[in-house]
Image 1 (cartoon, rainbow, N blue to C red):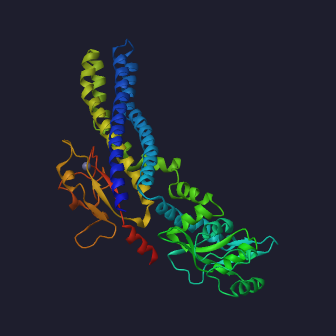
Image 2 (cartoon, rainbow, N blue to C red; image 1 turned 90 degrees about the vertical axis):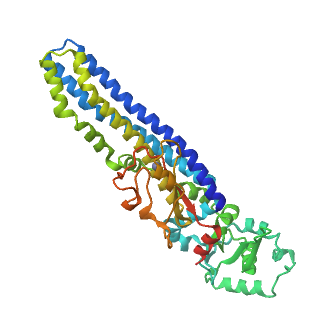
Image 3 (spheres, helix red, strand yellow; image 1 turned 45 degrees about the vertical axis):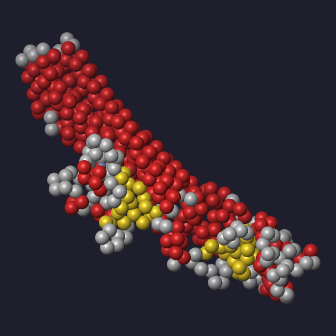
Length: 436
Ligand SMILES: [Zn+2]
């Protein structure tokens, strides 16, 4: 998976550049909302309205600032969440070989959807209407699975194999024919007992379809005109078998998109957008200044007959504070949401992932210690001397383990543009894990 690892780094980096741009856009928009409100406020101050009325309006405009900015930010975060997930999925599909994804999808689909139906589903029908029930090959391994295929399609591919058994009607035995085997299976079929699936695989070099076991069985059923047969195949080849010979071809496409990367529901998007209580922080940042202090400025200013320019000048620092908070929150939350949905997408890679590498956007704004940790890998099962998930940051949040950051550093790293890339197991490692 070296190639896949490389492609994922490349893609997530390009994506992070776009995330930073979107974060800037969101931050500017949040500021614009507040400035618009501020201009309204200035107009009210300058107006000839009666004093109590003026005071009430100014207060409402001030207190509405964080709420309006919050709506704007939430809208932008929703867009980032939807875009971010789609983009992360696209990155995975570009980086990880499709057969591997198909296999993961099949695993995931097999559990809720297919396993329950397996007994009914593994049935073929003869032209006479007689049903033939299949069970997996008698010595099926964990690394194998049993799929239903179209016998005509499988037969067409099998013809290239040296062990091919031609139809009985040709009167020609195959080169690998064992005398009496076909007759023996025909008698077995009469008993109505369940039939063990043949064991079939693609030859590694030629890519030809070949039978490890059960070729006479298959030849008899094929000649009888059965509509579907079960074959036991290596899991790693199941997707290929299904896509080339499958009875229900749509399974592969259905699996990949809908099973492995289901679209976010509105509730999930909302869950991601409102995580981290940034709304609370936005209001808190404003509350420090607003109710008492600002009310006094407005009331006393108006009562003392200050000019509206003077009152505006007194209010401006507080409003500037709201702008700074809103910008910072919009920016950081965009980065958080984008990273969160990307992490969710990467989680679908299951046991293919052995850990995550943190990477930093490197420029003059990067925190020096974020720059120096860039490249560090955090392992799901850390070995000696390796870091584990508790030490892993979730940018823009720092690791839960406080010893991972300089003393006194806050848990959220404002404006942090670091990101995580999954580190994939080697192909051989993954194969042996699944065969175990
Ligand atoms: Zn950072």
